[in-house]
Image (cartoon, rainbow, N blue to C red; front, top):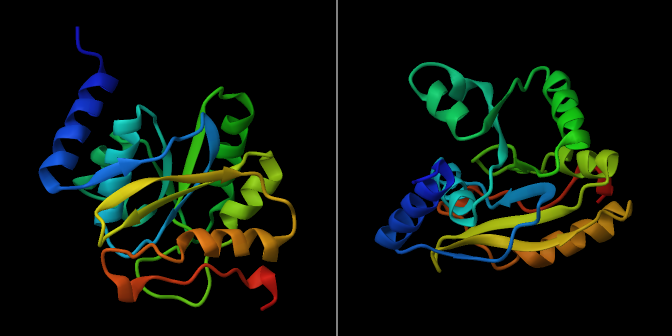
Length: 192
């Protein structure tokens, strides 16, 4: 008998193979998944295929505009969590409660916050990691090599600049689907 996760895994592997993408790395059971570079709506599709290939369910924060119209049921069915950018607090509080009680909790965040080039990343992933004690996993896609995967997992130290240096080192050679849209890994909180 086919179970939903087996069907998703098979579908993901077929689609990835047909499009020439490969997956790498190992995902933890619990963590804050930082996805970068985020330059295209296709990033979401590749992230879902990576999760399905890995046999995990990600709660992926997605702006509320994608939950209007015909995309809404698809977004919910894939584990996307609606984020009202004008008032994200309620969504984040609910997710933090889930993090305390769920044995497996994976929250995916596109730290760039937009598919267009910006000056800074959004620091929510860092703050949530600090508040929950959950480690950060650096998820990525690299357009030129057609690779999507899980990078290193590590706890935040509280030294924002040092943690961000580690993140910058990892993403230094990762290129998005639309390279000009990538925001360099930098937080306002670094004071740089």
